[in-house]
Image (cartoon, rainbow, N blue to C red; front, side, top):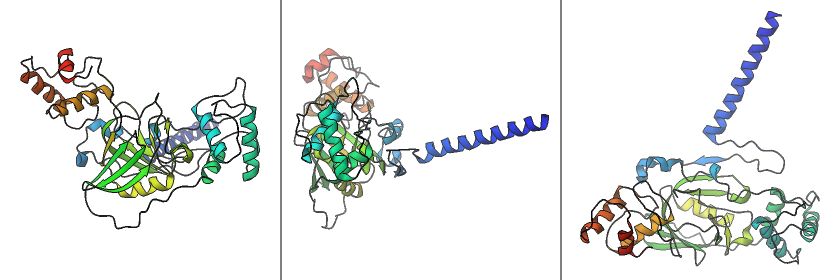
Length: 345
C-alpha cells in the first residue's frame, strides 16, 4: 500500500510538471490552445520590441501586445432570449446585406430575420446550418468580399519609415524619407470608442492570430490601452468608423504594410481634436489629455518630445519653460494658469 501511494504521488507530480511546461511554453512562445469554431493557427510573435534601439521607456515593451487586446474578439452570435444586441450584430447584418441575403434594417439586434439570413448564408456556403455565427461564418463572409488592389510592385526605396493615419479621412499613408510611398483605406474607432490621436511607435509585430484581428498585428505603445493596426474578418467595415479604437485594414493590405515597416516605426494619428484638459497633470500622468497638453506646448514653441500621452521629464521641462517665460513658479506641473496660457481647457 505504501508503494502504491508513493507511485501515485510520483504520477501526480509528473503530471503537474508537464502542465507547468505547457503553461511556460504558452507564456514564452505565445501558443494558443483552441477548440471548435476557433482559429487553430499558432500565434507567432516576431521582432520583439528593441527598446534600446527605439529609445522607448522600459514599460513600453509590454504595451501593444495582441494577447492583451479584446476590442476585436468575436463572441458567438445566435438567437437568444433576451435578444443579443450590439455593434457586432450590426456588423453581421452589414456583412449579410453586402451579400444580398439580409434585407432588414441595421438594428444591431439578432432577431429571427437575422437568424434566417444567417441560415441562408450557411446553406449557400456549405457550412453547418445552425444559425450560430462563429469564426467560420465570419470568415466565409469575409472571403466573399472584394478587396481593392493596392499597387506594390514598384521598388521599395531605402529610408526611414513613418506612418500617418488620418482618422477623419479614413486613410493610412506610408512615408519613406518624408515622401509618400503608399496609401491604404482603413476603418477607425466609433465615436464612443475613438482611435487615439498622437504620436506612437510600433512596438510589437505578430501574425496568424486570426478572427477579428485578421492575419497581421502591429501593436502601438499607447499608454492607456491596447491599440494596434491589424487585419479583419469584417472587410465591409473598411472606410467606416467601426472599431473599438484600433485601426482595421484589409488582410491583403495589412500584409503589405507588415513587410514595409519595422518595429520602432513612428505612427502619427491625426484628424480630430484631442481631448480638453480638466485634471491636474504631473509627471507620471498619461492619457489623451496629456497629448493635448504636449501638442499645445509644441505649438507655442516648447519641445515636450513626442506627443505620446506620457507626462515625462521632457514634457515637464517644456512646462517649466512656459512658466518661466510668463514669470510663474517653474515647477513643471499642469496648473490652471498653464492651461489658460495654452488654451487647452
